[in-house]
Length: 165
Image 1 (cartoon, rainbow, N blue to C red):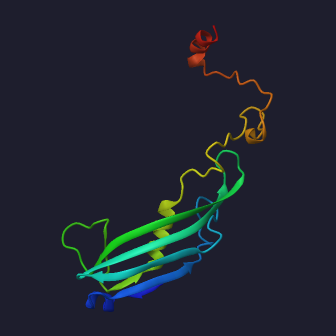
Image 2: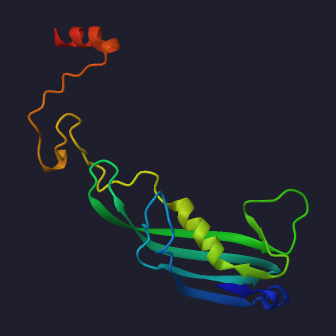
Image 3: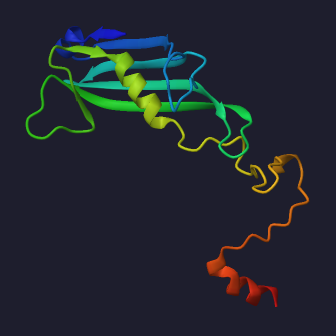
């Protein structure tokens, strides 16, 4: 969605409402396609006292296997985004100001960037996920296994002896 902001920059008090969905299901992320449902985008661009601001709220579902046990999970996320808009900036660029020299704003590009910056680096089915046994491969969330975990790093063998005594 590309917005023409000429009227917002020209008229104090002017506001444009944003309400649409963006299909990102064909977007590859870490070898998969985790955004199976469209991203809901709501917000507004408004001019208050001659300052043009953008506010966006994005809600989406992230579908991926758990990083510890591999169980498919779906988590819902919400991201809020607020920036000032300017036709030009003097000096250094700022993270809080978006320049729109032609007064046209590509909202899809901002949504795409913010959604992928907000994705979790580690995706877990639950905070208490135990994962798999490193010896037998049993999913420890379904119960314990019979393996003895006596594998000790040789550098720490003396410490284990002290703790066992």
